[in-house]
Image 1 (spheres, rainbow, N blue to C red):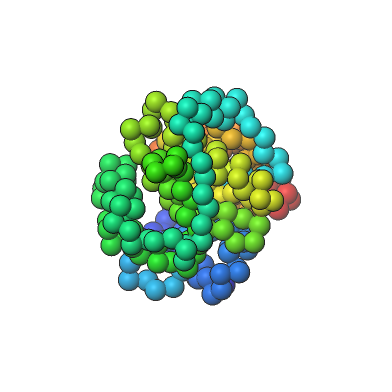
Image 2 (cartoon, rainbow, N blue to C red):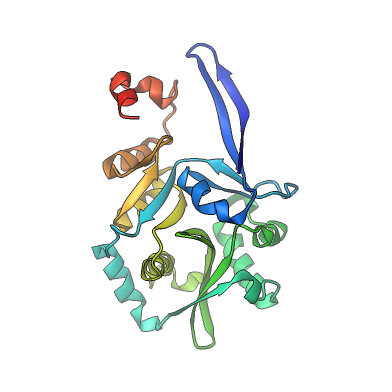
Length: 258
């Protein structure tokens, strides 16, 4: 893999010079190392041919520490009447061009992705990236409740994109159920980590509240301090005049812990 840095807006008043940090995947086998370093896949520019990743505050479940929470059990009870089964298939064994599948995904995306972020062209672009390797289908006989597009490689799974029948969103907590069931399946399969994407803003707090065994990438390591990530998510909308390192009251102690 290769790293590169893209300069962002400078602030001489506080000597803050921001760079966005990117990673270029050269081989699929690099995925566990890429995610371990806090990167997530970038698909915002459909003209980019390589699989590109950006560094961000992301969230993962350490499956060795994962056990069902009371919320997980509540969600499982609500979904039980649906008799949902989980089918996990490699991408090449799944018909990604099936009109019913595409319509299902786009119906969800048109309602749930703000600002028309998931167009049909981007959907095909995402499915075409080597990084995403598996389709998880949540179904009962001939009825499909939802799909998860995942990256599975080595010891890890990335819960990348989820699409589900919104008729069951509130009545059966279907979205939460699919995330929990995916984590459970990964643990049963002997994987080490499930990556849940970025963790910014109050709308991400459900990921933090719902699952045990969590850690977040804080820029230097995978941090298990749950009160800290909750506070960060709750205050992300508030502007800060310096980067967070400059705001630390005891910078020397922070450096010693690196």
